[in-house]
Image (cartoon, rainbow over all chains, first blue to last red; front, side):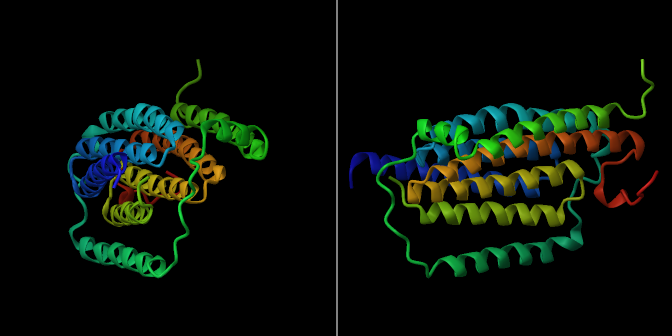
Length: 169
Length: 100
């Protein structure tokens, strides 16, 4: 096995450990602030997997947008609503077992569906960032523009929601 | 070059963790965190298959997922902040009024 492959496998194992541990913390910790920080661990692990899949641009976007923006926003929201989320943040006791059965069952079904499939050989040439950028302004230009429209709508909607009910100056 | 089957299995595990959280969490922000987990699982699956076939649109759609997740978090948190002012709770079980 070549040297780079072995290093890649080790890095993938580490990222997997971070993602699985972080995901378990996100759904089980009763302290929401800690759950949000574990979400950061998961997001960084996913960025690492993106890097290993030769999607460097997506890994950067993941770190910038998810860890940099979304997580900061979530942490702010948790702090702003902190006094309301002290007591009821713990999961309902009675729903844990059925929820575990549902999620483990879903995992088993997904694995059973895809395990017998034949996997084609991996493409030798990874997708380049240049190809991604070209695709975004040619074939996918319509979804790309629609996303910017959605951004404007989300911005206006968030401002309207957060300020509604206050007296206009 | 890492094998892709474990990546797909990892995305299944991430998605199922998100489903578990969606079913057990009561706090609205906690639910939002679980949605982010599931969106990340989907994005990881897209990127894995984009690598498998060397096809660029898988990565493009992962990019769209990240962008729309940002929008969803912004609007969701605005709704939660508004809810914390009007309903004085962010426990999703206690929000049972259409007009209040």
